[in-house]
Image (cartoon, rainbow, N blue to C red):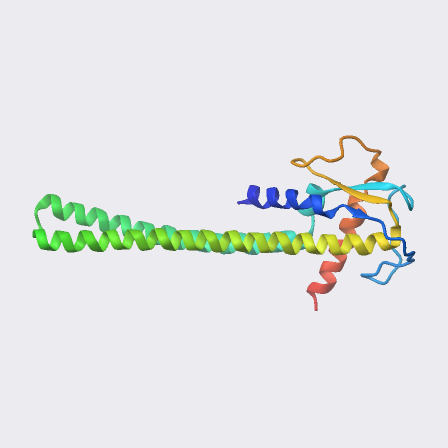
Length: 200
């Protein structure tokens, strides 16, 4: 599941590329405070963000991922319990059949009940898989929306010509001057904003 989440985020990373606004601004619109410049890049230049590093260290992503994994584990445990109970009932039925402890009518009734339970268990499993996939998509969308919103505001102050993204799976920047990497500066701002909003 972690791989699936990270893969989805990597695909979404392409959406973060932001073209600079022409309106000058002297302050970060999110925090309303001056932004500390930790990169050598200046206004009008092209910079980049390492999305893997940004996302894996973004407190919002880690909190949401932990919540999702906790829910996934609860569902998985419930499915395992239902599955074991069903397997035990099937073994009990087979044991009784082997020992000749059931009439044909009883055997047919119990077999039909077991088949019905099996179908219900399969349907329940599919429903939970769909639910978890939907929740994962919503989580990815929330994280990407927060990043895009912050980066747009961040760039109102910094006025970069373009902000590119790179990651292990979607490497759009093959080579770059390390001084053009604004990952840590963006990460710091994102986490500060998230912590501030989380307390509200």
